[in-house]
Image (cartoon, rainbow, N blue to C red; front, side):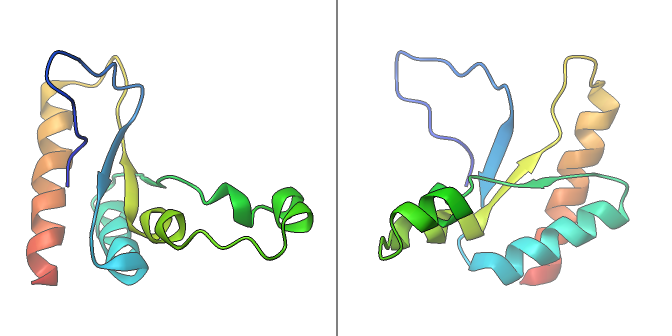
Amino acid sequence: QIPYIPKGYFHTYQSYMIRLRNGGEQRNSVMQKLLDAGIATRHGIPAAHLAPPYKKLYPKLMLPHTQKVSAETIILPLFPEMSESEQNHVITSLKKSLALLR
């Protein structure tokens, strides 16, 4: 799933995050396949309530939707000097890694 942009707005794309709906195992597999293709990625949205300072303050806080999204998101490489060839490499490699999961 690509980022949602409401009609009449535009995104500045400081980073480009996608969401894979089948959880952490699928995400981790895709991230490894991209790394094997020379593409570094990062886990997407962190579940802040699970970070030690917040976990200590709110030990019983459960945010299942946040945790689900956290397990399903990947930040793809994006930077001002990124060439069209590099963009195509990321896109092609991502498509290949997703096709292997089917």
